Length: 181
Image 1 (tube, rainbow, N blue to C red):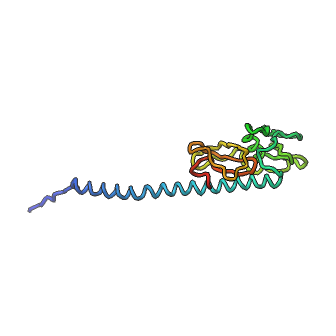
Image 2: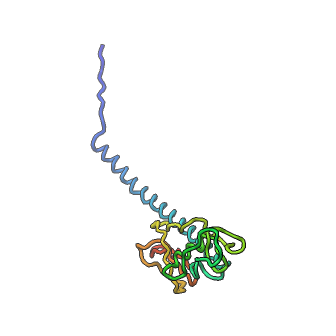
Image 3: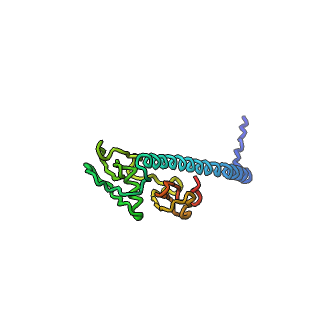
């Protein structure tokens, strides 16, 4: 009886190199597609967030006759909860804005954490305690100005967050690459 042994061979170095080259080419094609999808998703998220915040600003303006961030958020009326702390000065306008859109407010913009039908009957316009971070840098800082310039620009490419003009109600992402959304 004659038994033949079958010779088992592995892959050659050339075959392995060809496979590695093919995988590298595929990776070079696929990876940029994923990053383009990520950028598109961030842009869509930014547009949605901006639309939401701009609606908040427009509704506040409609009910109060001035844009949030103006006046004082420290309510002169009786407040059974926590009063707003933003005093209306430009240096504290970001806190005033946040108080006025995230808490209940009265006719003058004074804010309170508890609603009542007599005084603090408006809002809250934004249902979270703080503004969201921008989708590109995840910074929630609000920079408030009062120039009235409808063509205002971002403060730079490393700032992030939001830039808001309390004189005309314009809100943009505070990043030069995305301030035109």
